[in-house]
Length: 547
Image (tube, rainbow, N blue to C red; front, side):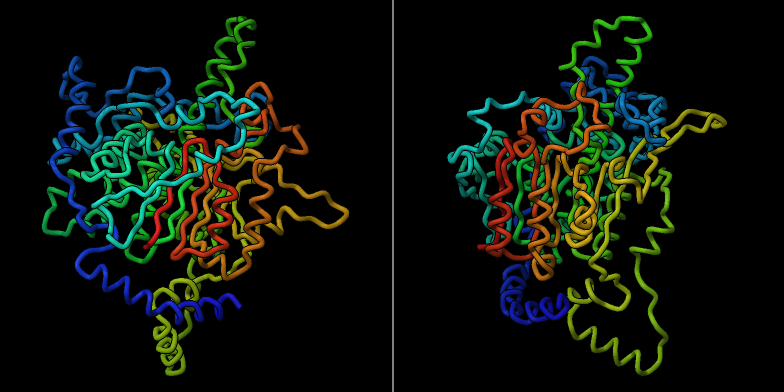
Protein backbone atom coordinates (compact mmCIF):
# COMPACT_ATOMS: atom_id res chain seq x y z
CA UNK A 1 0.00 0.00 0.00
CA UNK A 2 2.86 2.40 0.78
CA UNK A 3 4.41 1.88 -2.62
CA UNK A 4 1.08 2.20 -4.41
CA UNK A 5 0.09 5.36 -2.53
CA UNK A 6 3.47 6.98 -3.09
CA UNK A 7 3.44 6.15 -6.80
CA UNK A 8 -0.10 7.51 -7.12
CA UNK A 9 0.84 10.74 -5.36
CA UNK A 10 3.98 11.12 -7.47
CA UNK A 11 1.92 10.96 -10.67
CA UNK A 12 -0.70 13.40 -9.36
CA UNK A 13 1.94 15.91 -8.27
CA UNK A 14 3.97 15.78 -11.50
CA UNK A 15 2.45 19.00 -12.76
CA UNK A 16 3.28 20.82 -9.49
CA UNK A 17 6.85 19.54 -9.60
CA UNK A 18 7.20 20.82 -13.15
CA UNK A 19 6.17 24.26 -11.97
CA UNK A 20 8.76 24.17 -9.18
CA UNK A 21 11.48 23.05 -11.54
CA UNK A 22 10.66 25.83 -14.00
CA UNK A 23 10.57 28.39 -11.22
CA UNK A 24 14.12 27.49 -10.18
CA UNK A 25 15.71 26.90 -13.58
CA UNK A 26 18.33 29.59 -13.14
CA UNK A 27 18.99 29.02 -9.44
CA UNK A 28 18.43 26.22 -6.95
CA UNK A 29 15.70 26.62 -4.34
CA UNK A 30 18.29 27.32 -1.69
CA UNK A 31 20.59 29.54 -3.72
CA UNK A 32 18.57 32.36 -5.33
CA UNK A 33 20.30 35.65 -4.55
CA UNK A 34 22.38 33.54 -2.23
CA UNK A 35 25.86 35.07 -2.43
CA UNK A 36 27.13 36.44 0.83
CA UNK A 37 28.35 40.02 0.81
CA UNK A 38 31.23 41.55 2.69
CA UNK A 39 29.09 42.17 5.81
CA UNK A 40 29.48 38.57 6.92
CA UNK A 41 33.26 38.71 6.72
CA UNK A 42 33.42 42.07 8.49
CA UNK A 43 31.11 40.87 11.27
CA UNK A 44 32.99 37.63 11.86
CA UNK A 45 36.41 39.30 11.66
CA UNK A 46 35.32 41.96 14.15
CA UNK A 47 34.11 39.26 16.55
CA UNK A 48 37.42 37.43 16.23
CA UNK A 49 39.57 40.47 16.88
CA UNK A 50 37.58 41.31 20.01
CA UNK A 51 38.21 37.84 21.43
CA UNK A 52 41.90 37.44 20.60
CA UNK A 53 43.08 41.08 20.73
CA UNK A 54 44.80 40.69 24.08
CA UNK A 55 46.25 37.26 23.41
CA UNK A 56 47.44 38.02 19.91
CA UNK A 57 49.81 35.07 19.61
CA UNK A 58 49.56 33.74 16.07
CA UNK A 59 50.45 30.18 16.99
CA UNK A 60 47.50 29.93 19.37
CA UNK A 61 44.78 31.51 17.24
CA UNK A 62 43.03 28.22 16.55
CA UNK A 63 43.25 26.70 20.03
CA UNK A 64 42.03 29.59 22.17
CA UNK A 65 39.03 28.92 24.34
CA UNK A 66 36.33 31.08 25.82
CA UNK A 67 37.19 31.57 29.46
CA UNK A 68 33.65 31.84 30.71
CA UNK A 69 32.90 28.74 32.72
CA UNK A 70 29.57 28.05 30.98
CA UNK A 71 31.32 27.18 27.72
CA UNK A 72 33.97 24.91 29.21
CA UNK A 73 31.88 21.81 28.58
CA UNK A 74 32.60 22.20 24.85
CA UNK A 75 35.66 19.99 25.09
CA UNK A 76 34.95 18.05 28.25
CA UNK A 77 34.67 14.28 28.29
CA UNK A 78 31.47 13.14 26.61
CA UNK A 79 30.72 10.19 28.84
CA UNK A 80 27.26 10.27 30.32
CA UNK A 81 26.95 9.01 33.87
CA UNK A 82 24.65 10.28 36.58
CA UNK A 83 25.29 9.34 40.16
CA UNK A 84 22.61 6.63 40.08
CA UNK A 85 23.53 4.96 36.78
CA UNK A 86 24.81 1.39 36.89
CA UNK A 87 25.18 0.50 33.21
CA UNK A 88 28.59 -0.67 32.06
CA UNK A 89 28.89 2.10 29.51
CA UNK A 90 28.56 4.68 32.26
CA UNK A 91 31.77 3.49 33.87
CA UNK A 92 33.77 5.34 31.25
CA UNK A 93 32.99 8.70 32.85
CA UNK A 94 36.45 8.88 34.43
CA UNK A 95 38.02 9.37 30.99
CA UNK A 96 38.47 13.11 30.53
CA UNK A 97 39.60 14.90 27.40
CA UNK A 98 42.56 17.20 27.48
CA UNK A 99 41.14 20.52 26.29
CA UNK A 100 44.28 21.94 24.75
CA UNK A 101 45.27 18.75 22.92
CA UNK A 102 41.69 18.32 21.74
CA UNK A 103 41.69 21.80 20.26
CA UNK A 104 45.02 21.31 18.52
CA UNK A 105 44.12 17.97 16.97
CA UNK A 106 40.64 19.08 15.95
CA UNK A 107 41.94 22.20 14.23
CA UNK A 108 45.06 20.65 12.76
CA UNK A 109 43.77 20.59 9.23
CA UNK A 110 42.81 24.25 9.50
CA UNK A 111 46.23 25.31 10.69
CA UNK A 112 47.79 23.56 7.69
CA UNK A 113 45.39 25.24 5.26
CA UNK A 114 46.56 27.78 2.72
CA UNK A 115 43.51 29.91 3.51
CA UNK A 116 44.16 30.75 7.14
CA UNK A 117 42.43 34.11 6.91
CA UNK A 118 39.11 32.67 5.78
CA UNK A 119 39.20 29.93 8.42
CA UNK A 120 40.16 32.47 11.08
CA UNK A 121 36.95 34.32 10.28
CA UNK A 122 34.76 31.22 10.17
CA UNK A 123 36.03 29.68 13.40
CA UNK A 124 36.07 32.72 15.64
CA UNK A 125 35.71 32.32 19.39
CA UNK A 126 32.15 32.08 20.75
CA UNK A 127 30.21 35.32 20.52
CA UNK A 128 26.85 36.17 22.03
CA UNK A 129 24.85 33.86 24.27
CA UNK A 130 25.25 30.10 24.17
CA UNK A 131 21.93 28.84 22.67
CA UNK A 132 22.07 25.57 24.62
CA UNK A 133 22.69 27.20 27.97
CA UNK A 134 20.23 30.01 27.32
CA UNK A 135 17.39 27.61 26.45
CA UNK A 136 17.91 24.91 29.08
CA UNK A 137 19.11 27.29 31.78
CA UNK A 138 15.71 28.96 32.07
CA UNK A 139 13.70 28.47 35.23
CA UNK A 140 10.41 26.60 35.23
CA UNK A 141 7.40 28.71 34.32
CA UNK A 142 4.67 29.69 36.83
CA UNK A 143 1.62 27.48 36.63
CA UNK A 144 -0.47 30.29 35.13
CA UNK A 145 1.98 30.68 32.24
CA UNK A 146 2.71 27.01 31.64
CA UNK A 147 0.61 26.86 28.45
CA UNK A 148 1.53 28.81 25.30
CA UNK A 149 -0.31 32.11 25.05
CA UNK A 150 -2.40 32.83 21.94
CA UNK A 151 -0.10 35.74 21.10
CA UNK A 152 2.93 33.45 20.99
CA UNK A 153 1.24 31.26 18.38
CA UNK A 154 0.64 34.13 15.94
CA UNK A 155 3.03 33.97 12.97
CA UNK A 156 4.32 36.97 11.03
CA UNK A 157 5.39 36.78 7.42
CA UNK A 158 9.04 37.75 7.03
CA UNK A 159 10.23 39.02 3.67
CA UNK A 160 13.68 37.83 2.67
CA UNK A 161 15.42 38.23 -0.66
CA UNK A 162 17.76 35.36 0.09
CA UNK A 163 15.23 32.59 -0.49
CA UNK A 164 13.43 31.45 -3.58
CA UNK A 165 10.55 33.73 -4.43
CA UNK A 166 8.26 30.69 -4.24
CA UNK A 167 9.05 30.24 -0.52
CA UNK A 168 7.25 31.90 2.37
CA UNK A 169 8.89 32.33 5.79
CA UNK A 170 6.70 32.81 8.87
CA UNK A 171 8.00 33.40 12.39
CA UNK A 172 6.45 33.95 15.79
CA UNK A 173 7.25 37.08 17.75
CA UNK A 174 9.50 35.26 20.24
CA UNK A 175 11.89 33.89 17.65
CA UNK A 176 11.83 37.12 15.62
CA UNK A 177 13.08 38.98 18.69
CA UNK A 178 15.69 36.31 19.36
CA UNK A 179 17.03 36.36 15.80
CA UNK A 180 16.58 40.16 15.75
CA UNK A 181 14.60 40.40 12.53
CA UNK A 182 11.45 42.33 11.70
CA UNK A 183 8.68 41.74 9.22
CA UNK A 184 10.62 43.63 6.54
CA UNK A 185 14.12 42.25 6.78
CA UNK A 186 15.49 43.26 3.39
CA UNK A 187 19.24 42.79 3.74
CA UNK A 188 19.12 39.44 5.60
CA UNK A 189 22.12 40.37 7.74
CA UNK A 190 20.17 39.35 10.83
CA UNK A 191 19.88 35.74 9.66
CA UNK A 192 23.54 35.50 8.71
CA UNK A 193 24.79 37.08 11.92
CA UNK A 194 22.48 35.03 14.12
CA UNK A 195 23.50 31.77 12.45
CA UNK A 196 27.20 32.66 12.76
CA UNK A 197 26.82 33.50 16.44
CA UNK A 198 25.10 30.18 17.09
CA UNK A 199 27.71 28.32 15.05
CA UNK A 200 30.49 29.88 17.11
CA UNK A 201 29.15 27.89 20.11
CA UNK A 202 29.07 24.57 18.25
CA UNK A 203 31.22 21.83 19.79
CA UNK A 204 34.79 22.10 18.56
CA UNK A 205 34.84 18.51 17.31
CA UNK A 206 31.99 19.24 14.88
CA UNK A 207 33.09 22.74 13.97
CA UNK A 208 36.48 21.58 12.78
CA UNK A 209 34.89 19.05 10.39
CA UNK A 210 32.10 21.27 9.08
CA UNK A 211 34.03 22.33 5.97
CA UNK A 212 34.19 18.76 4.73
CA UNK A 213 30.61 18.02 5.75
CA UNK A 214 29.01 20.98 4.01
CA UNK A 215 31.44 21.44 1.13
CA UNK A 216 29.27 19.89 -1.59
CA UNK A 217 26.25 21.97 -0.58
CA UNK A 218 28.25 25.20 -0.64
CA UNK A 219 29.81 24.38 -4.00
CA UNK A 220 26.42 23.65 -5.48
CA UNK A 221 25.06 26.93 -4.14
CA UNK A 222 27.91 29.19 -5.21
CA UNK A 223 29.30 27.38 -8.22
CA UNK A 224 32.67 25.78 -8.73
CA UNK A 225 34.07 28.95 -10.33
CA UNK A 226 34.30 30.92 -7.07
CA UNK A 227 36.33 28.69 -4.76
CA UNK A 228 37.51 31.61 -2.59
CA UNK A 229 33.91 32.69 -1.93
CA UNK A 230 32.99 29.15 -0.87
CA UNK A 231 35.85 28.99 1.61
CA UNK A 232 34.69 32.20 3.28
CA UNK A 233 31.18 30.87 3.94
CA UNK A 234 29.76 28.67 6.67
CA UNK A 235 26.16 28.22 5.47
CA UNK A 236 24.17 28.69 2.31
CA UNK A 237 21.48 31.41 2.46
CA UNK A 238 18.79 28.79 3.05
CA UNK A 239 20.83 27.19 5.83
CA UNK A 240 21.38 30.57 7.49
CA UNK A 241 17.65 31.25 7.62
CA UNK A 242 16.85 27.80 9.05
CA UNK A 243 19.78 27.46 11.46
CA UNK A 244 19.29 30.91 12.99
CA UNK A 245 16.01 29.56 14.47
CA UNK A 246 16.83 25.86 14.79
CA UNK A 247 19.92 26.51 16.92
CA UNK A 248 17.76 28.50 19.36
CA UNK A 249 15.43 25.49 19.82
CA UNK A 250 12.42 26.98 18.08
CA UNK A 251 9.86 24.57 16.60
CA UNK A 252 10.50 24.34 12.85
CA UNK A 253 8.14 23.20 10.09
CA UNK A 254 9.63 22.86 6.59
CA UNK A 255 7.16 21.85 3.88
CA UNK A 256 9.25 22.82 0.85
CA UNK A 257 11.93 20.13 0.97
CA UNK A 258 13.00 18.70 -2.37
CA UNK A 259 15.91 16.88 -3.96
CA UNK A 260 17.80 20.13 -4.51
CA UNK A 261 17.80 21.42 -0.94
CA UNK A 262 17.59 18.07 0.85
CA UNK A 263 21.34 17.78 1.52
CA UNK A 264 21.46 21.34 2.88
CA UNK A 265 18.63 20.61 5.32
CA UNK A 266 19.96 17.20 6.38
CA UNK A 267 23.43 18.62 7.06
CA UNK A 268 21.92 21.24 9.36
CA UNK A 269 19.85 18.63 11.21
CA UNK A 270 22.89 16.39 11.73
CA UNK A 271 24.93 19.35 12.96
CA UNK A 272 22.21 20.43 15.38
CA UNK A 273 21.36 17.08 16.98
CA UNK A 274 24.95 15.84 17.34
CA UNK A 275 26.02 19.17 18.83
CA UNK A 276 23.10 19.03 21.27
CA UNK A 277 24.11 15.59 22.58
CA UNK A 278 27.78 16.55 22.91
CA UNK A 279 26.88 19.73 24.79
CA UNK A 280 24.42 17.96 27.11
CA UNK A 281 26.72 15.03 27.87
CA UNK A 282 29.69 17.34 28.33
CA UNK A 283 27.81 19.39 30.93
CA UNK A 284 26.77 16.26 32.83
CA UNK A 285 30.30 14.91 32.87
CA UNK A 286 31.70 18.25 33.97
CA UNK A 287 29.26 18.35 36.89
CA UNK A 288 30.07 14.73 37.77
CA UNK A 289 33.74 15.70 38.04
CA UNK A 290 32.97 18.65 40.29
CA UNK A 291 30.80 16.51 42.55
CA UNK A 292 33.56 13.91 42.83
CA UNK A 293 36.06 16.63 43.76
CA UNK A 294 33.73 17.99 46.44
CA UNK A 295 33.20 14.53 47.90
CA UNK A 296 36.94 13.90 47.89
CA UNK A 297 37.42 17.03 49.99
CA UNK A 298 34.68 15.96 52.41
CA UNK A 299 32.66 19.08 51.64
CA UNK A 300 29.29 17.36 51.69
CA UNK A 301 27.47 20.58 52.51
CA UNK A 302 28.31 22.02 49.07
CA UNK A 303 26.64 19.11 47.29
CA UNK A 304 23.35 20.13 48.80
CA UNK A 305 23.22 23.05 46.37
CA UNK A 306 21.10 20.97 44.03
CA UNK A 307 20.07 23.76 41.65
CA UNK A 308 23.60 23.97 40.27
CA UNK A 309 23.64 20.30 39.28
CA UNK A 310 20.24 20.03 37.57
CA UNK A 311 21.43 19.11 34.10
CA UNK A 312 19.42 16.08 32.89
CA UNK A 313 16.06 14.36 32.63
CA UNK A 314 14.39 11.32 34.11
CA UNK A 315 16.03 9.08 31.53
CA UNK A 316 19.00 9.43 29.20
CA UNK A 317 17.45 9.54 25.66
CA UNK A 318 17.40 13.12 24.39
CA UNK A 319 16.56 12.91 20.70
CA UNK A 320 13.82 10.96 18.91
CA UNK A 321 13.98 10.70 15.12
CA UNK A 322 11.07 9.25 13.14
CA UNK A 323 11.81 8.00 9.61
CA UNK A 324 9.78 5.94 7.12
CA UNK A 325 12.21 3.17 6.02
CA UNK A 326 15.48 1.52 6.98
CA UNK A 327 17.25 3.01 3.98
CA UNK A 328 16.38 6.56 5.09
CA UNK A 329 17.66 5.76 8.60
CA UNK A 330 20.85 4.35 7.09
CA UNK A 331 21.43 7.59 5.19
CA UNK A 332 20.83 9.79 8.24
CA UNK A 333 23.11 7.80 10.55
CA UNK A 334 25.92 8.00 8.01
CA UNK A 335 25.46 11.76 7.79
CA UNK A 336 25.66 11.97 11.58
CA UNK A 337 28.86 9.92 11.59
CA UNK A 338 30.31 12.22 8.95
CA UNK A 339 29.60 15.23 11.16
CA UNK A 340 31.43 13.55 14.05
CA UNK A 341 34.58 13.09 11.97
CA UNK A 342 36.62 10.03 11.07
CA UNK A 343 38.63 9.38 14.23
CA UNK A 344 35.89 7.46 16.03
CA UNK A 345 35.32 3.90 17.18
CA UNK A 346 31.96 2.54 16.04
CA UNK A 347 30.53 -0.52 17.73
CA UNK A 348 28.21 -2.88 15.80
CA UNK A 349 28.85 -1.12 12.49
CA UNK A 350 28.85 -4.38 10.48
CA UNK A 351 25.51 -5.35 11.98
CA UNK A 352 24.11 -1.92 11.15
CA UNK A 353 25.30 -2.12 7.54
CA UNK A 354 23.77 -5.57 7.21
CA UNK A 355 20.38 -4.65 8.65
CA UNK A 356 19.99 -1.12 7.30
CA UNK A 357 22.33 -0.88 4.31
CA UNK A 358 21.70 -1.42 0.62
CA UNK A 359 20.48 -4.82 -0.50
CA UNK A 360 22.23 -7.11 -2.95
CA UNK A 361 21.01 -6.77 -6.53
CA UNK A 362 20.49 -9.74 -8.89
CA UNK A 363 22.50 -10.67 -11.96
CA UNK A 364 22.60 -8.83 -15.28
CA UNK A 365 20.29 -11.11 -17.21
CA UNK A 366 17.98 -9.75 -19.90
CA UNK A 367 15.00 -10.14 -17.57
CA UNK A 368 16.77 -8.14 -14.89
CA UNK A 369 17.69 -5.40 -17.34
CA UNK A 370 14.09 -5.03 -18.45
CA UNK A 371 13.04 -4.81 -14.82
CA UNK A 372 15.60 -2.10 -14.16
CA UNK A 373 14.31 -0.13 -17.11
CA UNK A 374 10.80 -0.27 -15.65
CA UNK A 375 12.08 0.90 -12.27
CA UNK A 376 14.06 3.74 -13.83
CA UNK A 377 10.93 4.90 -15.60
CA UNK A 378 9.29 5.46 -12.21
CA UNK A 379 11.67 8.33 -11.50
CA UNK A 380 14.73 8.92 -9.34
CA UNK A 381 12.79 9.98 -6.27
CA UNK A 382 10.70 6.79 -6.25
CA UNK A 383 13.83 4.67 -6.68
CA UNK A 384 15.53 6.39 -3.75
CA UNK A 385 12.88 4.80 -1.53
CA UNK A 386 11.77 1.59 -3.23
CA UNK A 387 14.39 0.48 -5.77
CA UNK A 388 15.80 -3.04 -5.61
CA UNK A 389 18.89 -2.08 -3.65
CA UNK A 390 17.05 0.07 -1.06
CA UNK A 391 15.86 -1.44 2.21
CA UNK A 392 12.21 -0.33 2.30
CA UNK A 393 11.31 -2.16 5.53
CA UNK A 394 9.13 0.10 7.68
CA UNK A 395 9.49 -1.84 10.96
CA UNK A 396 12.74 -0.86 12.68
CA UNK A 397 14.19 0.85 15.73
CA UNK A 398 17.73 1.50 16.91
CA UNK A 399 19.37 3.27 19.84
CA UNK A 400 22.69 5.13 19.54
CA UNK A 401 24.91 6.33 22.37
CA UNK A 402 27.94 8.64 22.35
CA UNK A 403 30.78 8.63 24.82
CA UNK A 404 34.45 9.53 24.94
CA UNK A 405 36.71 6.98 23.33
CA UNK A 406 39.23 5.49 25.74
CA UNK A 407 42.65 6.97 25.33
CA UNK A 408 45.50 4.85 24.10
CA UNK A 409 48.07 4.88 26.91
CA UNK A 410 50.75 3.65 24.50
CA UNK A 411 50.32 6.66 22.22
CA UNK A 412 53.53 8.70 21.92
CA UNK A 413 51.71 12.02 22.04
CA UNK A 414 48.39 13.12 23.39
CA UNK A 415 45.73 13.83 20.79
CA UNK A 416 41.99 13.84 20.38
CA UNK A 417 41.04 10.23 19.77
CA UNK A 418 37.44 10.92 18.79
CA UNK A 419 34.21 9.48 20.09
CA UNK A 420 32.98 6.01 20.97
CA UNK A 421 29.74 5.45 19.06
CA UNK A 422 27.63 2.47 20.06
CA UNK A 423 24.93 1.37 17.64
CA UNK A 424 22.05 -0.81 18.89
CA UNK A 425 22.45 0.41 22.45
CA UNK A 426 19.69 -0.17 24.97
CA UNK A 427 17.06 2.57 24.75
CA UNK A 428 17.55 3.59 28.38
CA UNK A 429 21.29 4.12 27.78
CA UNK A 430 20.98 5.77 24.37
CA UNK A 431 21.26 9.41 23.37
CA UNK A 432 19.46 8.98 20.05
CA UNK A 433 16.45 6.80 19.26
CA UNK A 434 15.86 6.36 15.53
CA UNK A 435 12.76 4.41 14.56
CA UNK A 436 9.85 4.11 12.19
CA UNK A 437 6.43 4.99 13.64
CA UNK A 438 5.34 1.38 13.31
CA UNK A 439 8.50 -0.05 14.86
CA UNK A 440 8.46 2.29 17.85
CA UNK A 441 4.76 1.81 18.50
CA UNK A 442 5.21 -1.97 18.54
CA UNK A 443 8.15 -1.56 20.94
CA UNK A 444 6.19 0.44 23.51
CA UNK A 445 2.88 -1.41 23.13
CA UNK A 446 2.98 -4.75 24.89
CA UNK A 447 0.50 -7.57 25.36
CA UNK A 448 -2.46 -7.17 27.66
CA UNK A 449 -0.58 -8.97 30.42
CA UNK A 450 2.49 -6.76 30.13
CA UNK A 451 2.45 -3.07 30.99
CA UNK A 452 3.44 -0.67 28.23
CA UNK A 453 6.94 0.74 28.59
CA UNK A 454 7.50 4.23 27.17
CA UNK A 455 9.44 5.76 30.05
CA UNK A 456 12.48 6.21 27.79
CA UNK A 457 10.48 8.92 25.99
CA UNK A 458 9.88 10.91 29.17
CA UNK A 459 12.82 13.30 28.75
CA UNK A 460 13.06 13.73 24.98
CA UNK A 461 14.39 17.21 24.18
CA UNK A 462 14.27 17.20 20.36
CA UNK A 463 11.72 15.37 18.19
CA UNK A 464 12.34 15.09 14.46
CA UNK A 465 9.80 13.89 11.92
CA UNK A 466 11.78 13.57 8.68
CA UNK A 467 10.32 12.75 5.28
CA UNK A 468 6.92 13.18 6.86
CA UNK A 469 5.24 13.06 3.46
CA UNK A 470 6.28 9.41 3.12
CA UNK A 471 5.16 8.50 6.65
CA UNK A 472 1.85 10.18 5.87
CA UNK A 473 1.28 7.51 3.23
CA UNK A 474 2.01 4.71 5.69
CA UNK A 475 -0.16 5.30 8.76
CA UNK A 476 -0.09 8.72 10.39
CA UNK A 477 -2.01 7.42 13.41
CA UNK A 478 1.21 5.73 14.57
CA UNK A 479 2.95 9.11 14.63
CA UNK A 480 0.12 10.66 16.63
CA UNK A 481 0.20 7.78 19.11
CA UNK A 482 3.93 8.26 19.69
CA UNK A 483 3.66 12.03 20.08
CA UNK A 484 1.08 11.54 22.83
CA UNK A 485 3.54 9.43 24.85
CA UNK A 486 6.48 11.82 24.66
CA UNK A 487 7.40 13.80 27.81
CA UNK A 488 4.94 12.00 30.08
CA UNK A 489 5.84 11.38 33.71
CA UNK A 490 7.68 8.03 33.97
CA UNK A 491 6.02 5.12 35.71
CA UNK A 492 9.30 3.74 37.04
CA UNK A 493 12.02 5.92 38.51
CA UNK A 494 14.63 3.40 39.61
CA UNK A 495 17.07 4.82 37.04
CA UNK A 496 16.47 8.45 38.04
CA UNK A 497 18.61 10.70 40.22
CA UNK A 498 16.06 13.36 41.16
CA UNK A 499 18.75 15.68 42.52
CA UNK A 500 19.93 16.10 38.90
CA UNK A 501 16.55 16.40 37.14
CA UNK A 502 15.74 19.81 35.66
CA UNK A 503 13.00 21.79 37.39
CA UNK A 504 10.77 22.20 34.36
CA UNK A 505 10.52 18.41 34.08
CA UNK A 506 9.51 18.11 37.72
CA UNK A 507 6.83 20.74 37.08
CA UNK A 508 5.44 18.83 34.10
CA UNK A 509 6.51 21.51 31.60
CA UNK A 510 8.76 19.38 29.40
CA UNK A 511 6.76 20.15 26.26
CA UNK A 512 7.63 23.87 26.60
CA UNK A 513 11.36 23.08 26.36
CA UNK A 514 11.00 20.37 23.70
CA UNK A 515 11.88 21.23 20.12
CA UNK A 516 9.75 19.78 17.32
CA UNK A 517 11.19 19.71 13.79
CA UNK A 518 9.06 18.43 10.90
CA UNK A 519 10.27 18.17 7.29
CA UNK A 520 8.10 17.32 4.31
CA UNK A 521 7.93 17.81 0.55
CA UNK A 522 4.48 19.31 0.76
CA UNK A 523 1.92 20.64 3.19
CA UNK A 524 -1.04 18.57 4.35
CA UNK A 525 -3.82 19.08 6.92
CA UNK A 526 -2.62 16.08 8.95
CA UNK A 527 0.92 17.44 9.08
CA UNK A 528 -0.20 20.95 9.98
CA UNK A 529 -2.56 19.69 12.68
CA UNK A 530 0.15 17.54 14.29
CA UNK A 531 2.70 20.33 14.20
CA UNK A 532 0.30 22.92 15.60
CA UNK A 533 -0.75 20.60 18.44
CA UNK A 534 2.77 19.71 19.57
CA UNK A 535 4.78 22.87 18.79
CA UNK A 536 4.92 24.46 22.24
CA UNK A 537 8.55 25.52 22.56
CA UNK A 538 9.15 28.68 24.58
CA UNK A 539 11.70 29.69 21.93
CA UNK A 540 9.03 30.25 19.27
CA UNK A 541 7.75 28.80 15.98
CA UNK A 542 9.09 28.99 12.41
CA UNK A 543 7.38 27.77 9.25
CA UNK A 544 8.96 27.62 5.80
CA UNK A 545 6.59 26.66 3.00
CA UNK A 546 5.80 27.13 -0.65
CA UNK A 547 3.42 29.85 -1.75
